[in-house]
Length: 173
Image 1 (cartoon, rainbow, N blue to C red):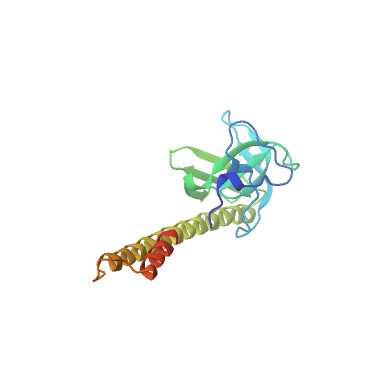
Image 2 (image 1 turned 120 degrees about the vertical axis):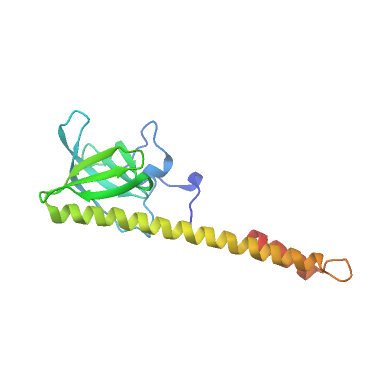
């Protein structure tokens, strides 16, 4: 379910820019529906800039153009606390957990809705995967504890090879 950072492959055409994690430019997971397109982003100076945006893993990555050669910035979707459609003209906000907001604009309100739905879907899928991993770890710990308990309760005081093999399998699960 989780790909170690060492084994991530860079998505075709993406160059790693200094300061970005490998997971920002890694090839998007197969379990995520692709989403990319032109959006406008409001700069810190209040100027609207057209940028090519792409959902990539748990990041909303943006580039200067469609070639996707160099990442300008990446918004970590795990830190997006809330999303909102601002008006009927395609404006939307991503409200971050650190109280910062990203102001974006799609070509129309329907397109803005599609972008926000895609972002929420990725967040939901991420939470489900995280819960599944946590549950699997808890289940594995429970099985390991049960197997170790059987070993220590052995009447002869010696563990059977089956009990040891079972405990090892439970611990590695």
